[in-house]
Image (cartoon, rainbow, N blue to C red; front, side, top):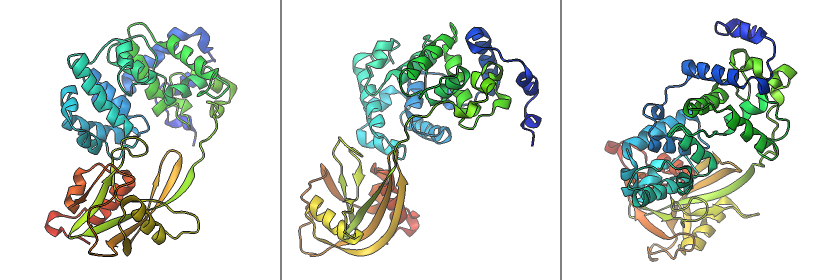
Amino acid sequence: MDSSSSAPAGASARMSQPFAPPQQNIPRIQRALLDWFAVNQRRLPWRVHYTPYEVWVSEVMLQQTQMERGVDYFNRWMARFPDIAALAAADEEAVLRQWEGLGYYSRARHLLAAARKIMAEHGGAFPSDLEAIRALPGVGPYTAGAIASIAFGEKLPCVDANVERVIARVFDVDSPVKQDPAAGVVRRWALRLVPEGLAREHNQAMMELGALVCRKKPRCEVCPLAVFCSSRHLGIVEQRPVPGKKAVIKPVQAVTGVLRRAGRVFVQKRPPSGVWGNLWEFPGGRVEPDESPEQAVVREFMEETAFTVRVAATYGIIRHGYTTYRLTLHCFGLELADAAQSALPQLTAATESRWARPEELDGLAMPAAHRKLADRLFAVAPSAAHTP
């Protein structure tokens, strides 16, 4: 099917216009982008009032998170922590539980620490000065620029992956955009494109265009910047942006065990630093070479808790993908090998532990794979509550 046949009115005429070099048409690019955004922007909850708090939370959440999922998490977060004061007053356990499933839990801990810093040093008002924003825990150059421009109207660019893609194509940036010199080229063009007094609208328009139109598989037939796009003019749109080295996804075989005693299950809390910091888990670890998963879970329990256990049930496999590795988690039901042994563990890989009732697990923040296991075993209707 001819892609232009389904394009909106005016798209075919725009595509047939002669190429207009972007370097010479900055004002036209700015206007075309703003006009497009005024009509095509998505209705998102943080775009209603543009409060600094909402902009900040949305920007942090949308790192490594798809938009649709981010909206759901944002709405639940705001219902639980409607303002900076409510967040600052919360305990970390509640914050991590609210964040559960988004991954990269340091982001949630940084939000909490920053909220407390704002209450202590700025009287509860989100700072408008760029340096003060940048000084908040967990706020890097991109997030600081996004807050300053979108919430406060500062003439700063927001350069995320969507914006990198748009600029790499429009200006034909011919080396990997994540590395210099291309990264510097992208940022300079991004800054030059920001119109005076319209940073909020422009930066969101750039990100929106990259998300909706100038995608990995671009929709050039409906792009408002098509006539200015150097890579389209050269027939190399699919070759921009130039990719860097791909991350190697490493497979990881691991085990975990649900140890039961007197109607309760054993969970432990990981140390604050490292992977899954301060999250609750069923103990376990990696499967060593020439070791079966059953042998691994017994060994891991002994090493981490000093409990001598045996496998009582097999709960199957849970698979979960992360940025650099793919986890295959073998799950088991366990019981103490000697019922007379003490219920007090000797922890080597955790800061605290507890024997929790199954219904209490819902209130604990857990890594995604462990939450999947808890839901598989214990997420039943209250009227039918039982231990499998």
